[in-house]
Amino acid sequence: MSVVSQVTEPDAVNDYGSDVLNQPFPIRVMALKVEGSTHPTSQSTQVQHQIELQIGEREKIGQGTFGKVFRAKLLNTEEIIAIKEVEMEEKFKSRELDMLKMLNHPNIVKLKYFFHSTSVHDNKDMLYLVMEYMPMSAHRLIQDYRRNHKILPLFYIKLFVYQMLRGLAFLAANGVVSCTPYKT
Image (cartoon, rainbow, N blue to C red; front, side, top):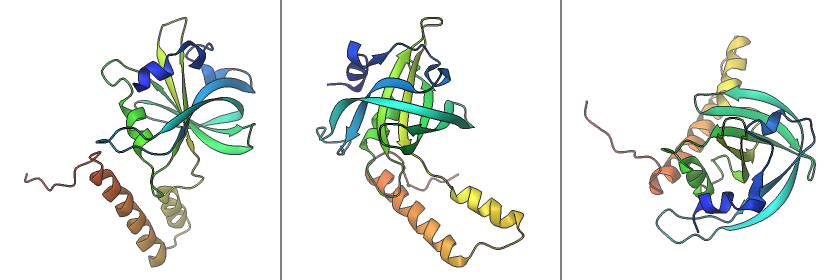
């Protein structure tokens, strides 16, 4: 069963329009929970369960070319999560969703749930990726050290490089990125 057909089943579609995260809180949405893992070259071993999420207070913490990121709280579990809101464009469809669903590794942020909503005003399909919340990034930690005119301890540098390379090796082994050197 393809991801798109699972997301667009009537009981998995939310009726808030494309501005789900702008609704007064708490928001109740039906989402699919991602469990298990898949390998891009094998049959899916993931199990997806429909679940109602109750999303409490949220704040926008980032914005990029493809979407916005919000920090929020799941009222069901009291867990702090990150929600990425992206427009589902026809040429990209759910490529990011497919990739995130197969990435189950301790050094890669985990996708927990996903849901989507179609706007009645502009007919845009919005995909919402509910992921682990990382309260601090390596970039922010380095900035904090610089701001205080300190040098990041070698232990942290080694740890971050090790973790990034482990994550990158996993991505390369699963065909998500290529680590082949190219001549320029």
